[in-house]
Image 1 (cartoon, rainbow, N blue to C red):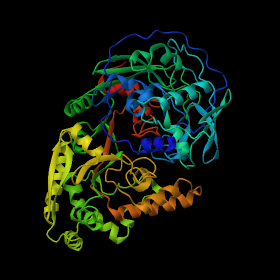
Image 2: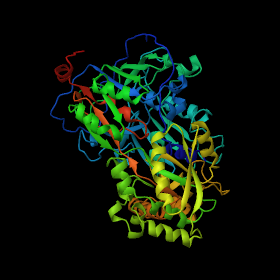
Image 3: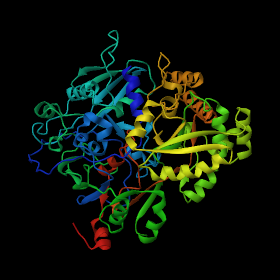
Image 4: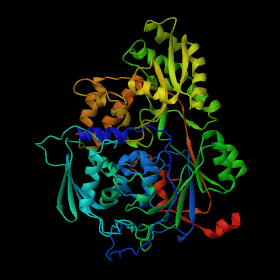
Amino acid sequence: MKKKIVWLVVSCLMVLALVLASCAPAVVEEEVAPPVEEEEVVEEVVAPGPEEPRYGGTITFVFFSPTPTEIFDPVYSTRSVTTAVHTYSRLGTADWSRGPQGTNEFPFSSSYIPDEYLMGDVVESWEIVDLMTIIFKLRQGVYWHNVPPMNGRAFTVEDVEYSFDRGSNDPRNVYYTAEERDPELPPFFVKIDDSTFQLTYDEEDTRMLHGVMNWMYMQPREMVEEYGDLSDWKHQCGTGPFMLIDCVAASSVTWERNPNYFQMDPFHPENRLPYIDKLKGIVIVDESTRLAALRTHKIDQLDVSWDKVEGLKKTNPELLMRQVLPDASHVMFTRTDIEPFSDVKVRQALSLALDQPKITEEHYMGNAYILLWPVMPSFVTHYTPLEELPDNLRELYEYHPDKARALLAEAGYPDGFKTEVTVPSNAPRWIDVLSIAKEYFADIGVDMEINVMEPSTWGSVLYAKNFAGMTYLAWGNNGIDDAFGWAHGGWVSDEGVPSVYNFGNVVDPIAQEAYETLVVTTDSDERERMRKEENLHEIEMCWEIPFPTPAAFSFWMPWIKGYAGEVGVGPDPYENSGVFRYIWIDPDLKYEITGIRE
């Protein structure tokens, strides 16, 4: 079903390097934008902070690697998110006023944004009619960027329909499905009037709001019709906060402020966003070069690996920093459909054999989390902290080699066994931690070979699910029900085929029943109770061997205001850069520190 395909992809994107496109510079023709309607709809006003925002200036951030040009086309959705989030809009976004800059109800320390902290983007409001149907009211005063052939025209209900239709029916889109919709169901999209439309899922699902809010970027019909697609950077036109004006192949992408952007500052409702005049993303592949650029104030913000934090704090005490949750957990997937890993005792033995506290303190210098799998702490209502786990589950994250040997003996492996773990060659830090694990496993009689593969070969083996024993990866579990569905038994088809992302080929009746019940349970308290219970079940089953996961660290310049290291405006896990629409620059402080005034 289309809904299942959509939610599957939304919830389980692998944390790989998101990157930049190959292109060349040009000049965007300027025209006068249409006037914005006087009756601007704004969100609930929150008391402003102590500092008055200022317009102007440039913020420079980093792309870690370059990529093909086609990522500029939002039909690729998540592949283009590092660029599309600045240019295009979707149905929903995060309610910035409820984060650290406002009421501080939600920490924005994770890319996952729960439904209750979402607000409309190009839509103003919505009504959930039933578990299959939502009626949306379009926001007034939304205009396309003032570039031909869109020429700043008003955004319409028909634009929403076109965007969903193009994305859903283009095989290049990650949400594409060739499966035909049941003809007895209402159409997915129905226009009610010029400002109202209805979306109808093909099955009942309590998570449908999050799904459609996150689903598709709004795409410019006339631009696609004139040029065939939007793969050329010169053909970018959205309704978002910034307009793409320049791109240098494998070097940089530059946006300028959209003067006709529809969002207003929730704390200063008289101020139209964004504040900065220009946004620039530059490609710096080498880590040491990125750090040097941050140290010398050439860039304004950078996500820094755990092992570089202390050095950066010493050399640049002026920098501000926040530790945030990673989007992915480090785990070792096991082939649960073959021996010896089909036996839960074997899987639990491997977990008991790892000294996770010691790995955290000595290898990661304390900059890691021990319990992030199957769900993240950001899922407060169904995450159980390590200290609150039942004794038999808490032990799985401690160090108990004697119990590990006993479990292996009970499973029929008193002398241990030989196995292998696959890992890509471009992940040296994963190889390092596996070398540590190899010694721990040897202590209980498990001889684990580390099979280092060329990345594309490793990926092929991963998705074909034909690795010999185990595979190690950092896999995204920062979306609602991620591990409950894609990684485990939740998405087993009617024919008994596990999800493409269920690398361990887990088929578990308990997980399957829990997932199918969860998606139709409307009582929120009962739904959270079930999720918490299922989380404990999955911890016990050890389908994946959890490893300590390094923390994420964000550093930024002190002249960046209205920002406290918020990870993103979601609901997409890779929308961290979407925060740039809200933040501003203190030019006086920048001049005081750097001697440079823009």
